[in-house]
Image 1 (tube, rainbow, N blue to C red):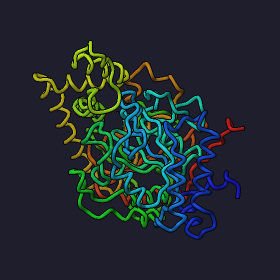
Image 2: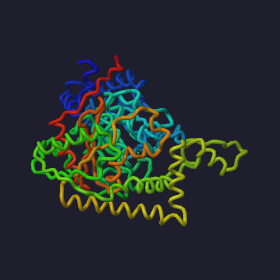
Image 3: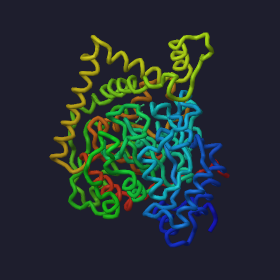
Image 4: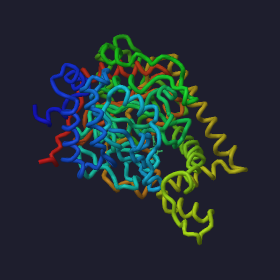
Length: 489
Ligand code: GLN
């Protein structure tokens, strides 16, 4: 079998072939490393490739030291998760040269499951953005059209999966950073229930919203990865001490007869591209044809989700990012015996952070400042409660909610860089689930102007299995579109 064929397989197929000894884990790892070497100069999905570590882990799988449903399957890790001894930059200059002395819980679970970590993927600096253009290391390109953005902040993870550089990737989603990249690259991305996957070792952006989750080319692959990384972790105080929902079984059910699906009235209309609305309307018809009962549901406060998020997330970020003080991690500027400690700190932060990160720190510091706290941060927290109540009421009527995942298809690189609000609006439909804490998935539902459109499914907290049940049935009826990758020839 040629190495191209090995990179085109799903994670489930690869794991089965390795377990049956039809192919070795080392061959699979090498095929993906070759693929990265062949295309990543144009895609730029990776910030760091760990060929040696990947081949060593694959050899352990081949030696029978590690086993499990994903043993030997290669994976791309978003550069916001710590991996011992491997550079972790979070897309920022301020962490340049930092090598974590420990593994994030997600990383440790992947290693223990025999997953082969290929390297760290590009991202918007500190996960702030929707295009990966805010990375301090240059943008990632969308494999569907290299002149377009791969979404963000986890554009590197989504692009790696779409370009066959890895069958699996890990992303993190604070306001949409797994789902929007999945939507615009034609891949499957899942934000698990908040507290479902440990945040230990995930460099914090907004601690009450951040959640790591799977990126894959199929619903089943995403479920297999979800099952490996999820589950209670005493090292994260917000981790939920309950069993992991049966995501793998749900992905294989392929039956949604009688399931009640709600179309969110407020996640349509202004701000959504016509092509996206058309594909979404067809997706709703297909769900009905598959036997679900589809009704319209109103979530009246969803329109306030975006402004509430842009107070809560920057507030938490301004506090979390205070730890980058030139002393503890990475970059240190002006430490020459002439500058004072205070000057070293401010020079380091001035040179280490990019403009979007500075904008968020200023927004957050302002929202938290005395005299403004109640009017901004306090008010946003009340809106968060109202949005949670919208979800609670909606889930009394229906089992899951659906909407477009992203209001548009992949836009051109540079198109929205000068307009932060246009960039922020990418997350119109994804942010409500983060504020509520429930799980949500984006999966492909066809093309508009030759570019992928994503269907979003939202479920109640700890019912991640429902996403996979609906997603699995939908995908079986409407397989994901395949990119032509015409730039390769
Ligand atoms: N695009 C959103 C932001 O810029 C969400 C980012 C994320 O989910 N990490 O904040």
